[in-house]
Length: 132
Image (cartoon, rainbow, N blue to C red; front, side, top):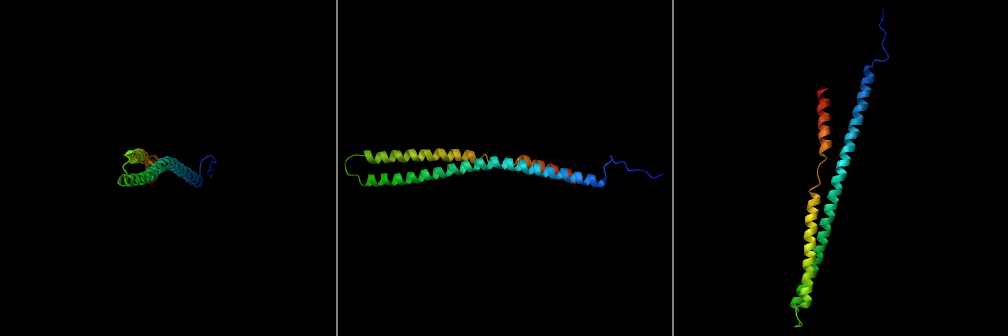
């Protein structure tokens, strides 16, 4: 007698189709994980770059103020040191703010990192697929 094929048992075609679908879902999940990790890193990097830009702008202002103060010092008209010392104090405040922003920017930029979990998951997937 001829054997009947049980319709409950998977065929090779169905197994291959299921495997392709599962691999596709796995790859999509890994891509989503990488996107999520990169989003956090990009945000930290953008904040750090913004702080570097603010520090650069404040240093530019500090150079302008220092130049005016130096000109006032050289031009000293005998009325005392009040005006140019005031300019130098403003220069010092701007410089301290710029240093603070640089330090904060460095701290934020150090938080930028590669999507480690996604890379590890991809390597595990690659290893599992190469064993098959």
